[in-house]
Length: 180
Length: 403
Image (tube, rainbow over all chains, first blue to last red; front, side, top):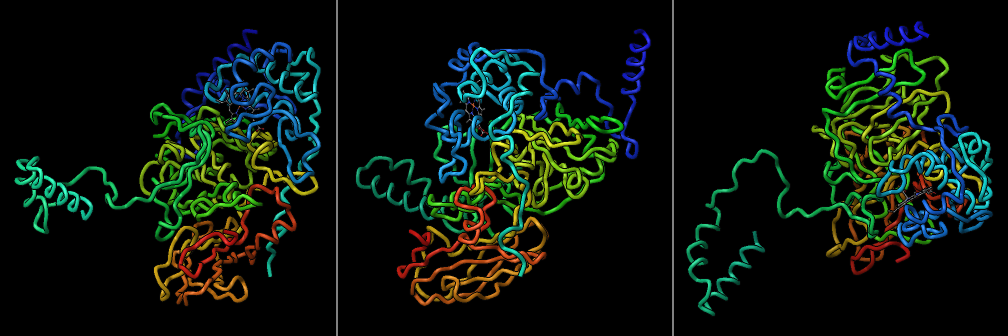
């Protein structure tokens, strides 16, 4: 154990002096500095922190912190119009596709990541990890993707297969306006 | 001064009539006017003339921390957008960032993670480049039925600046990229901590980590103190208020590259990672909302640009697309920058449909709106580079073709 610790100490000392090799500018960040901002979550759930919640817990968080803008049932506020969170399954092929977490988002961990970093719009970053798990569970259950009492944690969230998981295709351009 | 002096004359007349206000007015008037009056003193930071009124157009939505403001393209000369009129796109407001406290972190799949202060970045070799930034959603109002009556609203989410900063490839080389790395994740320091995945190949090519815009520091709404500038690629990926670059082996499929900035196709699938902004042009004069005073000489003017390189050719039609003439292209004609085109025109006073069509150096030709809809359907929201016609009516007013 002390071996590991002294290796960390040595690394930290080196960090204080380290600079970029060619220009000698900048320094090595401390592990804390990296951890402070490295909050991004991969589609497979890598990066999700500890914590858990159910839709039943999330109902209250949603009512207090989200419903004002996204509507009591996630149907979207009057403005901005583009933020409904529920519905639209089966609409993507129709002339009026409704794109929501339920109908469009390919990965559930991305919903966690976005709510954690960006919502509620007026006070982003103020929900606890458990509150984020709960409110994401509530949105997913309103979309009929999970059950109301299912406990969501990092593993459970990563296991969810979103309805539109396979709905994305690569850029096929130039497809119109070809060379003459 | 015309407005002010006539108001003053009105005031004086009123004063004389009523007998009021005479003492203050009579003494001031003679010296305050006329060609001999000394002008304003030197000032440390300039402002435009009080007669110039060009403004960005704000949306009519209630929350102005989320949304976009549009550049008045018809009122801009040349190819550079004044920094104060560069379009804005916000997801969680404009943060106030102290440059002395700001840091850029590079980590992930690198030999040595590095953290830079703004002073560090400004010590490194710098690059400057004129290039456009266009929101992927530019002209999306023009797609389908909803329409935009002016070129400001239909095309005003493109702007062009000279950007100065450090090559991203230099910073990544200093950190030492692992062989297995394929993407970078870029993250902002705004309240929403906006993040986008960018292929490493582009990151090692021509991306700038910019701190300068048109000769001064970035404007706060353009990412002060630090942003990515990705020549030719959709605006959203040009992450503003840049605080972190993580080198990774796969894209994160973040909210702004999955839920947004993806394009719905008629079969229900959606295209993702559609980064390049394809060749596009628009006539800014004559354009919607303007009025031609009388038949006679005018110069048709507009802007063309391509995310794949230089604009090679712009053709203009004044007869609804039956015949096309090559427009003149102003220098400088830079790759991935706005290019100004001009064509002398004698308006005969009859209804005219005016439009432009750009070809870039790869030979790609800007398609018609109908050709795009035929392949991509009416719900293809972003990356709309279709031709935009304007109708000059017999009374000289200019409107949308449908209008």
